[in-house]
Image 1: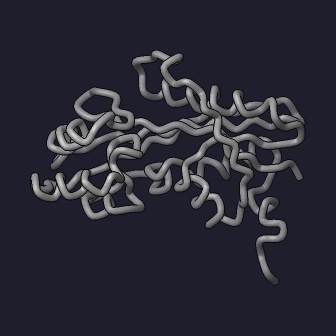
Image 2 (image 1 turned 90 degrees about the vertical axis):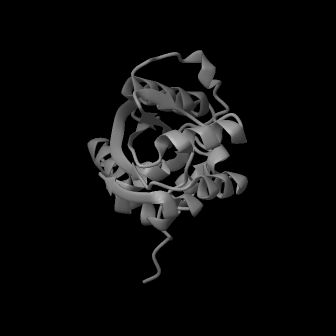
Length: 200
């Protein structure tokens, strides 16, 4: 079996994989995202995911390399990580009571077969109508500053999300059902990567 490599330093993505029995080798890409300027969110996240995977791929031979990237679309604008606490507060004041669309690009490279699949998960996120006090308190935790879209569903931010339409794990940064599909297209079974993980 090839080594499963995650081209991301995201602890949330690593945790999603480990919870599903896949223990990845983590190799941060450090790709400069400013090199990619695209206005369509789907094109943007798919391109960034592929570039991140390609940046890491040269360090491995027999491996599956997974690159991911997420953005949130609110009020017709693409949002990445906020640059400051002030920006995070302003963004939450705009987002509260509204619906955002979370795009996560996935690029899966099978180095031994020289094949690459690229796909995107899309999920609608309904934000609670939170108060200014709740927003300031949330931003003070520092969590929104680390996240595309200014919130972490699996963290403090879960309190402020009313409803999810679509894949839940996609919002955390990696759609597990989509990954299973992509592995299948490359000829693998997701359970192949459980080797040594399951105690009989």
